[in-house]
Image 1 (cartoon, rainbow, N blue to C red):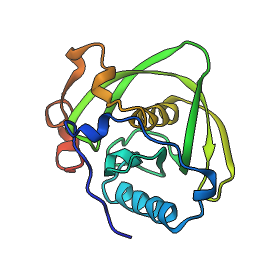
Image 2: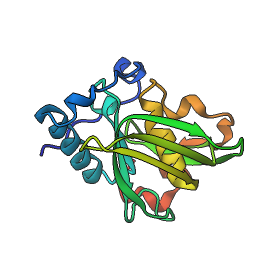
Image 3: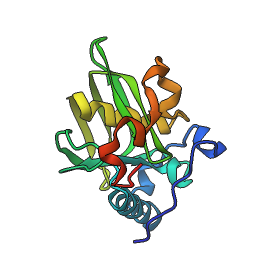
Length: 180
């Protein structure tokens, strides 16, 4: 499947609210091809996740997960997940600041506050229901990707801009990877 181009911050399509996918459309060639393209694109760029709006598709679809991620070398593995029409429920009110980057905001990292524990649900590529409770980096990735579906990019969530900057300056060891 082809690797798709990633829209960059400033493209107005990244600020749109995405449309839900009809459950009857999930098995369609269009949706299944979109899922495959998104997975191939995410893997080719060493992404932790990817949302359909990032490739210019205004649909409620995210993919995420990895065994090992070069962009987040200290992160625990996250099972590869395809989620259609996701929903997030916050569990508790504990937030945590941690570093994030984004394929649509290349070369930039920031500490972003996210809820520590969430429950998420949606449909997988076969139309089966996904329902998981997660915390830590897994919860962060899901919140980040689902933000794309409501037209939010991680810089919009930054509260302290003293922890915002170029990846090459903040994390020189990642610079040689050309991943952000």
